[in-house]
Length: 291
Length: 272
Image (cartoon, rainbow over all chains, first blue to last red):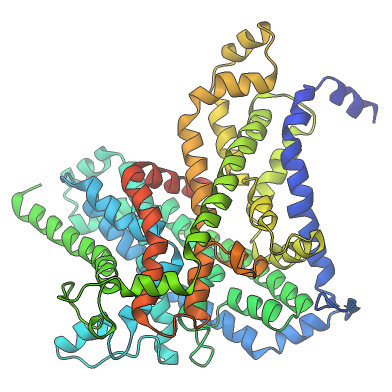
């Protein structure tokens, strides 16, 4: 105890004063909500009437909730399409941009444009591109003699369509991240490999890919977090339908809390999704780092 | 690079560029077209008019929403830069007992998914009586944890001599921060500023939760509700016009400062 007091006495006092804003913020907007969330998951509550202790019943309900399982499945479908698409497209364009070309800044800025525009704009726009009868994509497809695709009208296509749209929106950011990664690879590695007679394909798989390991991990983690946070796209475009096929984790929490007023259950969902996110990310980290 | 392969590079880049640019151009052109002509691949029409925009302005107070968004995002950005630099300074340049603990807490909070605190945060807003006020839109965003880390990182590299000299002159730490560090910190201020502004400007989920009265709605929220709430009466033209109005301000800012935007957003890569 005396040790602490001595430490505090020899500290620069302005340090406490200047870190105060964060400490206050942390207590009110991080620590309290976290603690309260832990309290809430054992209760049934709609804010208006008094709280009711339900023990583990929220969790019991969770494991028997078909919609909850569906929302996890939907998120996994989203990630299974979104992540590979994101990585391959971003890496492809990053490698083009990494060559000696003019207009690099122009293309970079162009690819980045959807990243800065609100998801609401992108979703309203893509709903029209995806429209079955009159959408731009189906107009182009039918012009080439193919059959129309029910982009957001069929349960099979709806989530993949949202994943494609999300890729289009975010890929600019990942092009930049890959570009940064590519520029960090020393030139002499390629030159040495070329002297040893390595073909471009070999150079790509034995130098480029391993060197970008960290960027890959980053892209995968950011995409995973994005997948579990997916909200505005299904909210605006499909409302979670057709047949709950685009009901995302976040949309389900939102509906439970603000449509049905089940605060305790919604908090349980949030708690559990957060847990899943951390587990999934840890697994991805292990897998990618080992390769 | 030989000529043939460089032509291929330009063709693929141009194709990619088209895939990103054309939908936006198509949207912009569609907002000026009559409803009947929207379902066309081309951009041109002989019947361009402003009906769709007129419909938007007649149905929703979109101008008010724009002002709300500007006000909220400006407050959040200003405060994130101010407090981010103050706390960042303390963590980078002052030695005090508990500093490492605060640093550890900050790193820990960065890995907490927001899904877990969303519902308790809403309840907090209800208990504070902040629902349907600007407070709920601004106060929870006033401190950016990532901003603190960026400022701290930047401040670590500023020479100690500058601080020592200023101390001899009798400057307080706040004076050192504002008079000596601030003029040197433009890059990090721009980065934190852009990230905070973008985060606040594009957020829809939180406003949807804490604001229900029209007068206080932010622009993305109002456009969302215009579309989802049925006020657009499934008129595609006016939906797209509302979306275009939402996109235009940020695109204008982006065209002037695109380099800063790209560099700032790329730092999110450091987050993990």
